[in-house]
Structure formats: C-alpha cells, structure tokens
Amino acid sequence: NVLEVEEAVKILAEHYSRMDTSSALDLLSDELDVKKIFPILKAIFSHNKTRSRRNQVTKSLYRIENLRVRSEYIRTRSKQVRIDNQTKCFYCSRRIGNAAFVRYPKNEVVVHYVCSENFQASVDGI
Image 1 (cartoon, helix red, strand yellow):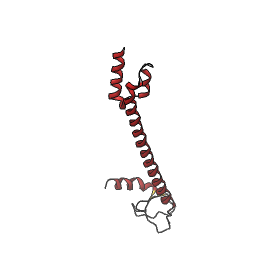
Image 2: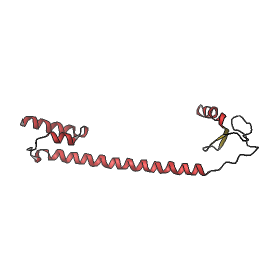
Image 3: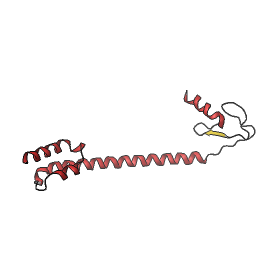
Image 4: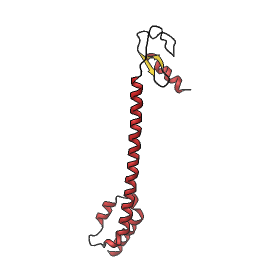
C-alpha cells in the first residue's frame, strides 16, 4: 500500500498540470505525511496562480476589445446619412428614392436593400 501511495504521489508530481488535482488529492490517504507532498502542493499552487493571472489578463483583454467594439458601434450608429431625390445606389446607379437601403459604414456607400447582397458579394470577391 505504501508503494502504491508513493507511485500515486510520483504520478501526481509529474502530471499535476493535466489533471484535476483536488480530486487526485482526495484519493490520497488521510494519514499521508504532508512533507511528502509539500513540493507537489507548492508546484500546484504556483501553477494555479499562473493560470489565474493568465485568465485575468485574457479577461481584461476581452473587456478592452468589448469596449472598443461598443465605442465603434455607437460612433457608427450616430452617423447620419441624408437620402434625397438625387441620391443614387452605388451598385446599380438608380435613384434610391423611397426604397429601403443599406449604408455600409466603412466606406459610406449607400445601396438599395435588394442590391446589397450582390454588392456585398462583389466586395467580398475583390
């Protein structure tokens, strides 16, 4: 039984980063001397601390990206486009008039709603 515990501790020491360490530690005997597993526990805590910091950095980066996209969305939504009787569809060159239209914010292009799919396909094909 002592050999099995030592083998389990050895496996835990080698592969702690790839397993659920709390479940693995629960399987060890309550009588096991903490001195034997202290280096493993130290490595596990260090690994978890590093992973936690990495996750915090990732979370912060996602939060920054979210704020950037929100800001861009608000800026894009606040832009106005004026459609009058002379405004022409960028794709088919006919007047927009009272027809439904789509405005592409990146290049300020206005096209008929029915032309938008063809326009988008032609832009994607470039």
